[in-house]
Image (tube, rainbow, N blue to C red):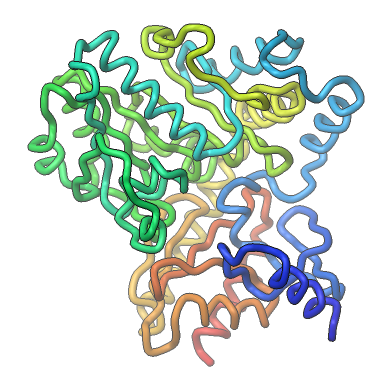
Length: 401
């Protein structure tokens, strides 16, 4: 067997089959390119679902990690460390907020947001104990814990994991009327993605996010924006909410915050909201560790320049123009997205999203399918126009075959 076949066979034999990756085995990567165990190079148009916004092996992030590795990597939150205060301060400033609660993974951050909203509802809003409700949108993807999949509408994510956690109301994404009708005196929060990534990069109707902001403010309900995929430069703004001038009560962040080097996530909000926690009521051994803080601080410094957001606008406009041309030729039924992020619905006659992804892999381009016939394109923000065009040429080749 080849090196690729050997590695895949071993993985299949000794790991749970909870993923169905493309049959490529990556050995190294730099920028927007990955090299497999056979020495073949592939253009990465997924960027780790936005975790690699700054590319593979970004020198600034690697240097920050190396420097911290030589000093201290973990203290647990039983002790203070010298990177923690700066991380919390700088991230709060980036978000225009006051307080940060650091975790590790995106799912942990969403769980933290849920706990925060419930605790705020009981202690501040005065909701009767055990009665707090959180409204979410259909087709959401917020993670895979038992609580989070309890409010998923995706059968693959939800089936066979019951009994499910109560306390959530699901309404159609983009429907303000349904949202308004679902609100009661026991509603403590609305949790939504400003752009739904896993659903196929769905951008809500114009005015939806401002409408959510207005409704939540009127009804004394927290607006929680899950910007784990959409945030930190992906859409051409630091946060996707900014495209409609909206500031939520709480940001949920992850993925790119760790620069693709270490898992870093956080809930960022006001002192009035995150101030509901007292010592011992929530925590994480690795949350806010020195290595994570060092890398995230460099991510924050990079975002503060605005160059990555500007690049996502410029290259994103080019990406959507080129994809729009494909949409007029019969092979592509629809294109959605914002910045360097696109969902492309392939005409079913040409194949499933998985089949198109496999054909693109043969052309040395890596993307990911979702929901049947859709592929997602989300290259690292550091990709060059020449490399992006090369990848788009490969897509045209596949679609015209």
